[in-house]
Amino acid sequence: MKVLFFALLIVMLHATAFSQEDGYLSESGTNDKTIIKKNKITIEVVCNYCFCKSTKGISVFSDLSKIILIDSVTVYYDENGNMTQRIRINKKNNSTLVDSFSYTPDNKLVQISSTSILNGQETDMGYKLYTYDSSGRISLYNEAYVLPNGITKDGLVQNVYNRKNQLVEVWKQSNISKLVLCEKYSYYIHGRIKKIDNYNDDYSTKFKYCCRTTNIFSTNFNEYYHKSKIVYNRHHQCVKYLYGDKINEFKYNNDGTLAESNSHYDGNMVSITQHQYYKGS
Image 1 (spheres, helix red, strand yellow):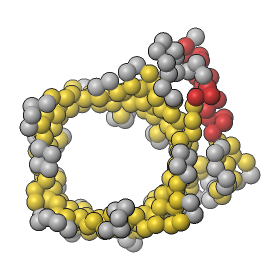
Image 2 (image 1 turned 135 degrees about the vertical axis):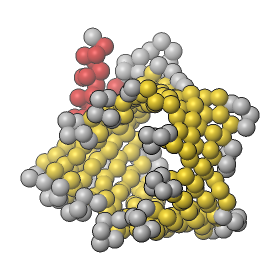
Image 3 (image 1 turned 180 degrees about the vertical axis):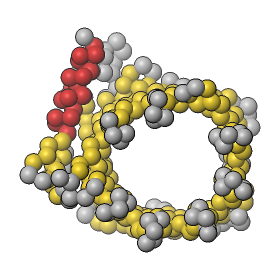
């Protein structure tokens, strides 16, 4: 019975969140319609539903009116399948964040610029720039954020690779510091990540693999210990992520694209994110 009720809930969410008609996409909670372009994958829409915290002993599914459409994300792609624009609308504070993506002729990402729109006013939120070495790896990564006081905070990240093309060191520099070592990576013989040492926050993360699971162990300078786990299906897709009392689950379409993700905390479901992909005819 519970399974049937959950399935009914998902169907109701799907029906109320999206409607597609005559080449247009309409989303409940938004004022606009977005034209569906005839590309490979033209638009990806993500809507996140959050459940209000239920009282003790009452199921989160007991009152559908508590389900709130928090945000929607619309992503545009070019004819090569590269993401060109991502529009995130937050229903809670009525704000919009627009990310624009630029690429080289060989489809390498070189820039992401962000703009915030609040109460009709546009604000530049900063940018990210990527530089590649002769092997096509990201060698430098520059980013700038505009703080609320109007000051721009710049940062430079430099990646160091070994002869196996594995990332072994990450160096960072800000407008108030020199270039310093922040992360160090080590690997097993077969190439899987073994350990990450983070010198910024002074903690270490170790990875252990078993069949279709990855166990992650983290410790910091206070010897705080934490364990998390990632579970995969036979297609090597992540289907579950366990972190303390939090559990994230992922479901996929037959073509391998992400269909749905949901989050549980302390035994209760707290959010559902549905993904819909529109393909040209």
